[in-house]
Image (cartoon, rainbow, N blue to C red):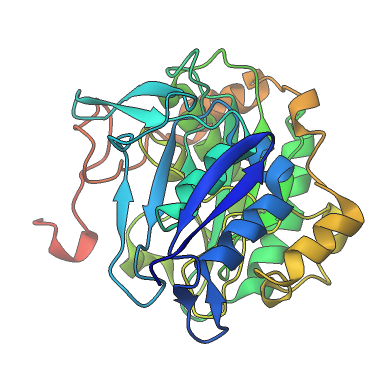
Length: 334
């Protein structure tokens, strides 16, 4: 366990300590397997992370050991990995790593980073998101198939607003859809657009889809987690390994694959094979940047015609003017 290996990544040499440490006992995958995986999908995950302040979800002792989220760049950060300064809802700030080459991903894997959580901004402008991210989260009583059905309906909603999304598995039971946007709007504005999209989706299938923030109100439906667009909320990147025993990964998909693909099809062993065959099926995302005027007009119309204003923020956020009471209905005092 004490030996090291040197991996060549894009012309850089990256040192890997304890390469035979087992990270996924159920499958027998080691730290070296993890590093080689990120080598195999290097260009794909770099496309998802490039220049983005990124939180590292670290499991230094493997998937069965303790884990933590590292937001601030480690003190031993190599000089060739840049950082970006992000501001938290509290007003405090941190400098997070911003990968600009695949070697940075492998370097983080050596620290036991399984999952990368990039912000929806680039380091040259950390106040204006360039992605609208929709998280379709199946609640108890629903499953991945329900999330897929919601995603296909979401595709139509987005098209009606002049938007296009790129879908991926969450690595669990959910589906993520990312929409590249021009970095012209603030976090609250992007969140407002996400709420408008979520509400339209809910209107089309209220028996299957919900925007209810409180779990006790959701029922057996797919929750559209609009708060994943709030400041300091992040979603696992495409190609990230998820911390489950079978080593699944968050798999980028083409829309035509959604109905047939299963989350368990994509893991540490199978994704490099798919990647070698197809490359990054989301490679063209950076060629597009959509505008949010139609979604924001939909939000204004919801407020004007239906009295639908803001929805609750996550608990760590300061109270926002116009936000509903931040207390679950069963505990509210009447």
